[in-house]
Length: 553
Image (cartoon, rainbow, N blue to C red; front, side):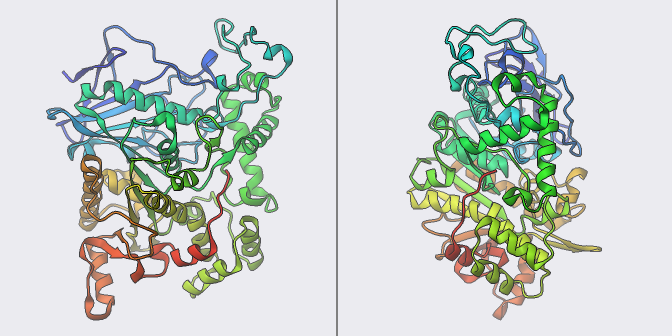
């Protein structure tokens, strides 16, 4: 009957459309709706229920303005957003490894209901797959100021929240009652749900791998170094982690901008009085203003204004710095990035167009990039248009170099880390299919058949694509089950001779071998980084010389 018993009550799932041997249990609450008296606060336990709860459809998505192909959109009034989904073999042996997925979307959009993240194929490979929604945008990462007045600061005070049935019978003087990083706290609550409930679905709470892409990958990195998440997962998969981490002061400045755009005071009471849709619209206006102003500094090029905050409570430092100091402990990492990350952001129009020497010079100055780094990219791309030089630089700055350094830092601190790069490309009528941001995820999830991902992967997949997808899914499964994705871990900086998996189709590997002296083909996509310098390996030698600035949203 596909009914499972959780600590909050029984839930009923349905058989997956693609594989009748897999049960999908969708929209399971892991925490209470974070609105009304719970707004801007830590996640609270979900209310238990009687009977059997129907969990055959995804839950509502977090407040956002995005409308994504194949996924539901948010509407004002959708409040039960802290839900998760489980895919599990109907006749599984139990004690299976668990993969928990955090989606990307610049901390402002996306959901677990995107077709890219359907867990059917991975569950068919022997995993229990969990995907989740958490708070985004201001609801999840906006800084809420300390008490607004002496009256509010009185520990006997209570706060009246729009939409609440009564005043909150709790003191509001502590900033911890309105914490930063609420989206990360939601993710921890979901992991606690997994710890307490996943055995009922055939999964092992002692064999949990936390995985994510883009902002989801940086969320994973943050939780890897957060003491509060310690012990909730033993392995982590990070695809295209984004270089963006804020101080409290930076987050407070963003709050002031968003509050002004919403027409409310940048105070606790003012922000609580603004409904979620008002803060979503205000966020969009702030981002658009940066996009339209070339003189606005770093945010002009890709105006993403939210991210994790060094609040001194959950997080004290950028994950890269924390991993270098050994904060990753015994967690094993599998890190991957694509070789042409930023071309996607250009294709969808979310990035500034840099087409003149003056614009490129301004970009380098805004981020403090040395002239040698810019000129090195020009030399490696002698026939490329100037826009491609910019996109290559930004790919390394925002994603590729940061991701690689996360793996290196963990390895150098004594941790176990594996590194991969996704370099599958295609030529098609009308242009080249890039190995760009997000293109790797449908391959790893085994969801190339989904029409909604064809823009990412360059059209319907061929047999070689399906074969690559199977190899990538096996790597995830092997890593989640045994800590072995199929190649050797790093033991130092990637570029000093360590093996790195480069994901390509067999056709691409054969073509690459034919171009090499003697036609030598590397075994199974594993190669030594020292053999190559160029886009395929993220221009590592140039970045090692130049250094990587750590960025804020």
